[in-house]
Image (cartoon, rainbow, N blue to C red; front, side, top):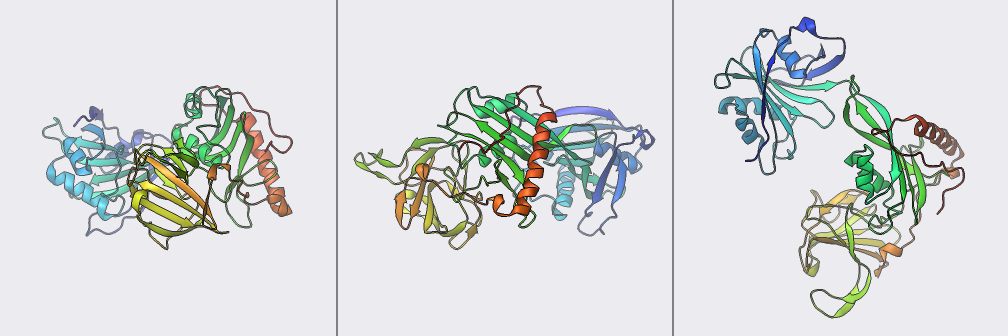
Amino acid sequence: MNLSRSTVTLSMLGIAAVGTSLGVFHSLGQSRTAEAQIPATVQLAMPLASTLLTADGFDPETEVITRDGTLQPRETLIELVTELGVGGSDASRSLQAIYDAELVDPRRVRPGLNVTAQFRGDTPDTAELVSLSLSRDNGGQILSKRMSDGEFMPMVLQPHTQPVERRVAGTIDGSIYQTALSQGAHDQQVVDFAKIFGYDLDFQRDVQPGDEFEIVYEEMVDERGNRVSSGNVLYAAFNGRRVDKSYYRFTPEDDGATDYFNFDGESATKFLMKTPINGARLSSNFGYRRHPISGYNKLHKGTDFAAPTGTPIYAAGHGTIERANRYGGYGNYIRIKHANGFQTAYAHMSRFASGMRAGTRVQQGDVIGYVGSTGASTGPHLHYEVLRNGSHINAMTLDMPTGRKLADSPAMFEEFVARRDEIDQMRQTAPTPNGGGVLMASHEAPPAP
């Protein structure tokens, strides 16, 4: 396999050398026969695993050999751990301790997981495994650590984190994705931005070079200011030829439903999404066309979005699945019943998401399946249909009603205005990761429709 593996030799430091920044680890279980451990607090000014090894009484002068690797597609954890040099028995027992504590489901690990193995000894051939560490998305680690009796104890190590605000803005040159990343944003911010504007923008047709955007978002950082994970988008704005809107993240206290609202407190959420997929290209519109397989003109009853196989497909609105099965030329097909006589349908999926079957209730934005080319299809794409009272209609031209209007609840609108003003202040002070991006003008009146 073409895996990236590195070997580093570290010298263990004594526990007295640990600095003042604090971190907490919780023992969540030992082996299948061990009692649960009492949570402890460890000062962390060095790698988490190194601190724990020293704290357990290993000789501070003992050299530790560290090997790390990244899980590749179609590779199992046991294969990766073995390739890092862990012997068969230690590989199985160290991972089994994690599995028994239900910290990792071996059937659901994903490529990209970082694994670090630490060995104690003078040479790689004679070194003994002392810890196995799996990285977590939130910056912590899952650790399987050899105890003095030779058994492995699973632990969760979590650094202290706090949210900080960041801001990116710019003029689009090429795509909003490329521009946002060049300004210092990460994939998650672009995905969240696309979801917020998913009701207003067709990102393939409506976004043009020269259009402007702005995103204020949170990042979780550790004690040293290093980024650990992405947080929420607090503000999103787009000023383009077709759309000029901005939205603020707000959670009304009366219902606790977090949403994004424009300057006047009107929700960005609409009854149905126009494009229930991210990063796709509109490949065929609603209307009469020459059918690519049959060769004669017929009504194309939906909208096609070309995307790579496996791209997630979202429920366009709240509703109940009426059918989820193989359906003739539609291939793998889901139809959802919504309120007010509406239905949406999704065809040619490669597979359904877990739990998708007739009778299942779904929320807007839930993943219901994945792009494929099943049925009568010439390539991977989503065929998306909207029906009203049994008749097919063009989803791209449908003017859907908006969600909540906070002005209808004076107390909630007053709270929103306070939060809106707070976020506008953040826009003035939040640092930009790469130092770029011009502040867009605030809406002092209702944004353009």
